Length: 133
Image (cartoon, rainbow, N blue to C red; front, side, top):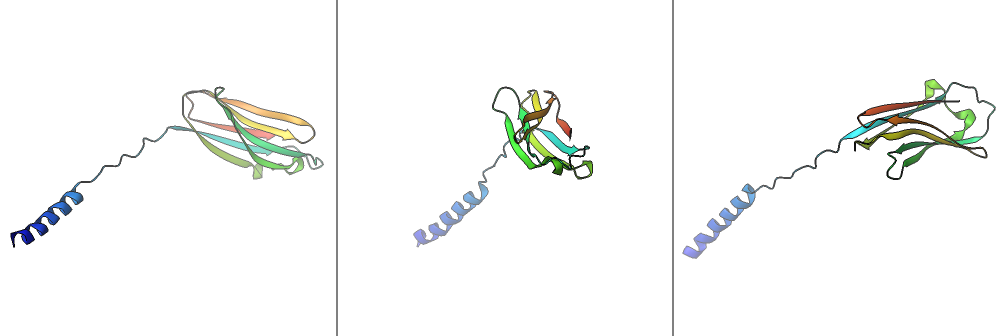
């Protein structure tokens, strides 16, 4: 009979231990970031220009491979005006380096061009506005 009484007591003690032992989960420390905002539009009249153009966002710290991502492809005549500007926002790790940021564009059959700027090592944000000409 004593054996039967011990089983529920041991079982209750085990449940209490399991419930009371909570593992603390530490969330990883947030990685500091910098914010880049890219604005693209034109103030010129390109209504007769049927060349294809593609725009890429360019971000580089000069040490590792640059981030280049195509964000828009259309005819030059279809580049939006200021009222319909294209806005892209990108967060990048704040590793304390100076970044080269901007737009790289390719006009089919003509070549490559760019509009680049600098995000200083201590700057936390930058807006790169490009009124394409």
